[in-house]
Amino acid sequence: MSHDKENKIKDISDDEVRIIGTTTASGNDGNDKRRKWYIIGALCAALVIVLLVLILTHHDNTTDTANSMPLTTDGTATEDSSVNDVWYANSDNSGRAHVTRRDTVVAGMHLSLMTPYNATPELSVGELNSNDKSIILALQAADIRRDNGGIVGAFVLKGEPLAWSLSKKGFCAIINDRMIIGVADNSPYFEQTAEQGGYFFRQFPLVDRGQACESEQTKKAARRALCSINDEVVIVLCHDKVLMTDFAKALAQLGAYNAIYLVGGDAHGIYLDDTDGQTHKIGEKWSKKMKNVNYLIFRS
Image 1 (cartoon, rainbow, N blue to C red):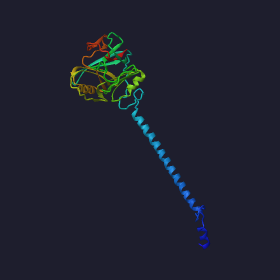
Image 2: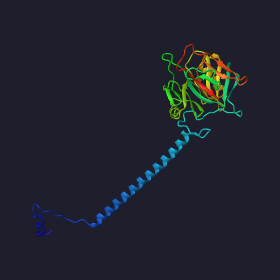
Image 3: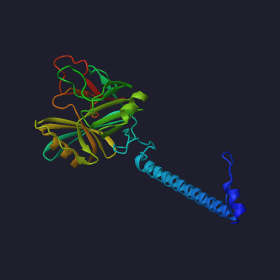
Image 4: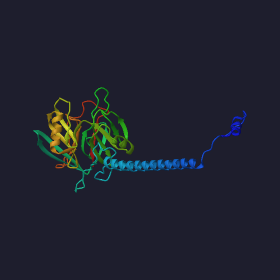
């Protein structure tokens, strides 16, 4: 560098800015191009990841829907795969409402199998009218509390919830004259019956998908059950005093797919005998009036 140039560089006033040295234009262009390709590559990679996530999510949702919402025999899908997904409405070619009774012995227990046909199931609360000729079968459904006379377990009457307890896992729901029986901690059918004007009650579980349920009850008593057997709703009465667990095992041996308990012992009920056309009494009425005594009724 010449002496004159050095003097010019040094001779810079306080308010003057000078750029010393040079930068080639080709160097900037190369860096810009590389940055451009890096950005394009990153965007492409992000797009591929988003597409993969969308494809996998759609696949998982399709699989989950297929597994959690199996179609029932009548094309209705359930909301919870943990519960039974079959709705029942017993019917035969006769077209008339009636009850068939079959007596048998299983594991030393004397049982009566009562199957209602061409009848409408419902729940009722209050004393049963034994003179109502439209009733072909009626048995007590949910238990009554001894302390305050309230209904034990969740209970819905014509869409109106009367009790909300989850103390018992067995349940029965009735919607549009069809019945479902199952075992589940939380059932979507409580809300569904409330929304659609149906019926719902809970009881002890006896058979869950063909497997007998164990019970901690140690007292022997005459037992009753609401069962699904061979795709039909069947009421089973045990005329011997037995343990709850032994009764459950007998029901499973009998071929029950799902079964829940009904009020047993000498609880009141009636049925219309198909052989003589007469209404017969089952058990005895309460010695005192119970406001919340409730019945599962099959009506012509």
